[in-house]
View 1 (cartoon, rainbow, N blue to C red):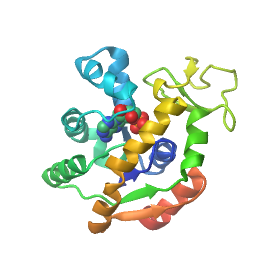
View 2: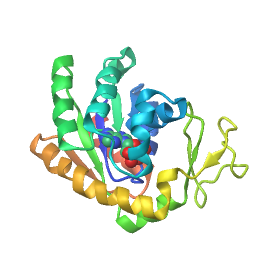
View 3: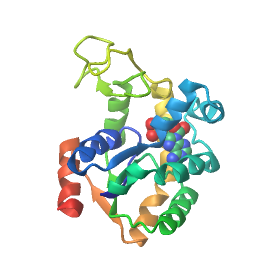
Length: 215
Ligand code: AMP
């Protein structure tokens, strides 16, 4: 499956992507996970990206396209890919179109996961993430806490609130999403690729996508 998952921070793109990878071996590509890994590893990319991420701003398009051009050429993408958090701007979407044309690859669709703003704010302020960059498992202190408080079930690393998931940072990220990323809905509608999904749970979103793409 070759899919873009579009949706505000907290819409459940990561969870949906992980569920979809189990269906057909497609790989999840999350630019946020890649960037957090680079920040922790202290690479040049990480140092450049960190200041934008901490402020809840978007990392410049040229840095993101450098990552994605390389990643999409890797052999594990041959079975399919689920783009989680990318593209986030019109220039990124245009650049992606060029890369995919060069690779001779077509998208199956763009799933726009719509969740009301208040629900997003509730979800993100209660979300916790594993600090291990190889894991980055996601929990929720209310609906899906780790078995031992503050410790990842999967790898035993600490589970923390991300720096960019305080209420003020989230509010700013949502504003940025509305300004920079929402125009992609029209972009992909015009490309004939848009699937609007309003299911209330991640499993429901996965089923809706399967019916319309994989099915
Ligand atoms: P995420 O985990 O997808 O919410 O991403 C966390 C942060 O990484 C975002 O708030 C941005 O600062 C940065 N980021 C991730 N993906 C992109 C992208 N495609 N374009 C620009 N910045 C990004």
